[in-house]
Length: 150
Image (cartoon, rainbow, N blue to C red; front, side, top):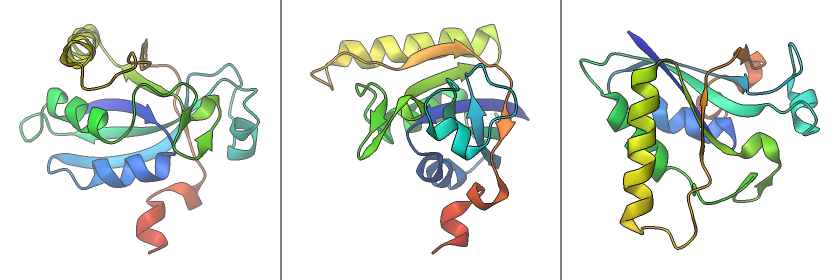
């Protein structure tokens, strides 16, 4: 099993999209990329902690590749948006790929470059690529939110 972490707006939607992919064995929503220890949802929503809403994936690379996960990531949001996705506005909704090793970093950078060169978007790709930091699991009511709240 391997781990991947992505931020692409509200974590409810991205968790639901990744959860449906064959080979993704576990999804957990939470917060990453900030300076405040043990943040909760209210802390992160202030925009003062520096965290992004993320989904952490445990996946089987024999069933789904990191490249396939990146392709899904690019398709599920607008990577040209800065500090927002749709109606959700704030730094916690920014687009980030958090890599867990050098191999993921290289694959993510190449994937971003290919997307930028494709001219699929008129604006530049704003997605950050950063080394994974401490992951703080979000409150239980956020986990599998759409499954719980059909």
